[in-house]
Length: 464
Image (cartoon, rainbow, N blue to C red; front, side, top):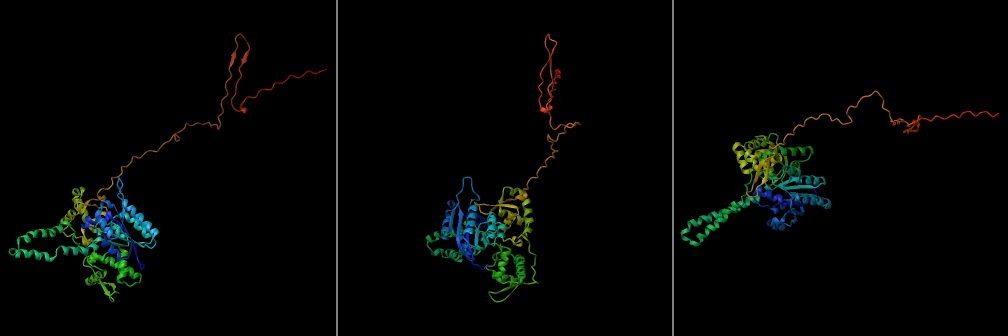
């Protein structure tokens, strides 16, 4: 961990752009992502995969940040995973051929990269995954070394843009013309509506989602206690840097910004003010200890406890969900039937993050709505179980021709069957009293042929 990280960045642009637009309603800022990775090490390579013929607006942004654009050539039949395969092959090739690269950053929310993450971890590489909490697979979030969410990267810029869009000066300027209207000429008064239109159109043109409410500090206490116990078993002093690295090791999706803190030091300070931990030591070498008497007012709810609430609402509105509905409509139904429901109580920063968790549990299926923005929710595989297989009729025992019962016989069959000899036929010649015997031909072995009787010669008379 003390070795300086040299990071290779791989961007699945088609996937990440749709996810950011559908959940955050804003364009992808690749510069902010690279700045966050530079805080963790040196970036030595940057690649982005997409069909750049359809992404003309993003080419300039990639060129300004020195990102090498890899063209994905679509096939006539379509290649949904074409960029995924190219990205995985290039990442493995770099792991084999560039030994100095010891960290990889995969900017995508696709769960198809889980085998790639596992393989790179086998080769001793550190893995960063950059994505959104509302569209990145929770399995991918927990399987890497550190998950960096777009929500945490875009919180501060989003607050700055709101202040820039609604400064106090334009309101004063708008009030002055009404007071000085009799003293001003008519042309400036006519030009005023044209100046107000851009300010009125900016919020509606980019419907950015509001910053999600921070999670309750009690949600972080189970993870913090586990990290302190691990360090205690290792007999290591729980300082700030070591404590955060241990918490990331236990849960890669942890981020102090989800609890409304800009840095980990601010996060620990909030825990101390809430009475959850004791902080001792000088600045820069703080030591964190768990207060034994501190107990949260309410026990922290687990994410799985929110699934029954969502399941009941899905069953009630099953007909509407068959054709798909907007995520905002589903959230309104949940809050109507359960007025006390709040996603932060279950560890989710917003409702979309809970839907993403429910999708991994096969409860819902999410698809981005590129036209209107947001997500389209439909019922998951849990509501469509596979049909039970019909029981096949029990077949009787198969009887072959060799199993047929043969006729029984008391005679022992001969091992070798010999052919039977032919019968002799006797003919009588016409007008003759003598018999003519036809020659009998015997077939078979010589041993079976009848022996011919040897003719005995009469004795010779004695010579005197």
